[in-house]
Image (cartoon, rainbow, N blue to C red):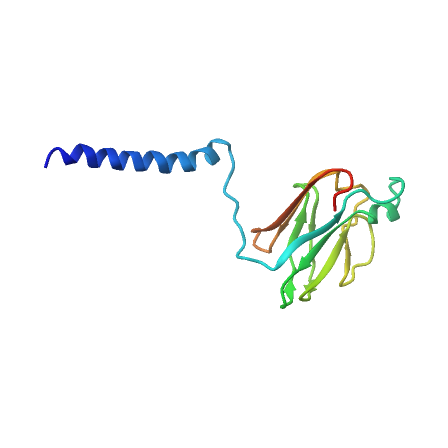
Length: 155
C-alpha cells in the first residue's frame, strides 16, 4: 500500500507539470488570452491598403484605401459599436449599421458620407500599411476576426 503512494504522487506531479507547461508560455510571453466572440458570420474581407495612384494625401487617395467587412451569413447583423482597428490610435467605431446577410461594407480611410455599402473613418492620414493587421471586435470588445497582410499587392 505504501509503495503505490509515491507512484500516485509522481503521476499527479507529472500531470501538474504538463498542465503548467501548456499555460506558462503564453503567460511568460506577456500575452493575455484573447476573448473571442462566439462564432460570428461577420469577417474581415478584402483589403486595399495601397491606394491606387499617387499617395498625395488627397481625400480621393485616402478613400482609395479601405477594408471590407463581410457578413457571410443569411441573417442581418447590427454592427453598432463594433470596431475595426489597426492599433489603439486608429480605431473606427461603427454607428448604427445593419449589415444585411451575404453583403459587405467598405470602411474607407478618408472623409465621406456613410451609406449601407461605404463608411468613412474621416482620417486625414493613411492608416493601412503594406504590412499590417485589421482587427474586428464586437460591441463587447470580443475579437470577431483579424486579417494580416504582408506584401505589395496582396488583397
